[in-house]
Length: 179
Image 1 (spheres, rainbow, N blue to C red):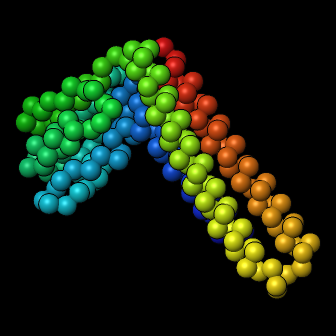
Image 2 (tube, rainbow, N blue to C red):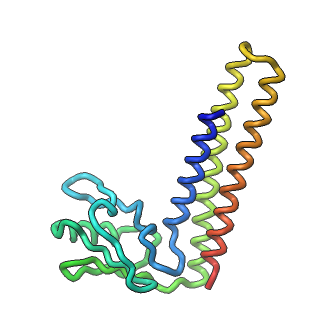
Image 3 (cartoon, one colour):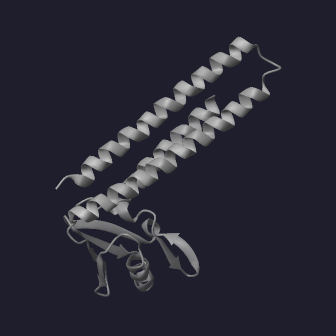
């Protein structure tokens, strides 16, 4: 049960991180936390190669620690799916300007977030299934009552984490549809 709780907490955290990577009306460094840059032949997270500031609501400045990585950072940002941003560099920093969100684009992002939420729920159900299998393996060592109570606790635990994902999903949808 403790292992299942730990894994479910982790699944909820991953879901919230995934939700943060879907943009709202503002430029946010969290949008770029999963961007991998080809740095000397190995994929490296952008956060390890550069600092990010957002001086304006829809602009993000990416300042590389190593100026030789500037072109690779720019290339990685241009190739980002679902961004639609204007990316340019002035030799010192990469400037990312996000376009204004249309209503259709917002609805598209809501669909993406719902898909990520469903993936997180599938992960929770997989953890529940594994825990249930582990409980069934203990059937010979513990009594029927203990097993039934543990299964009921597992269901309650799963429901609470599914509800947490639903709540985070609802907040993100509200944030996305807000004009």
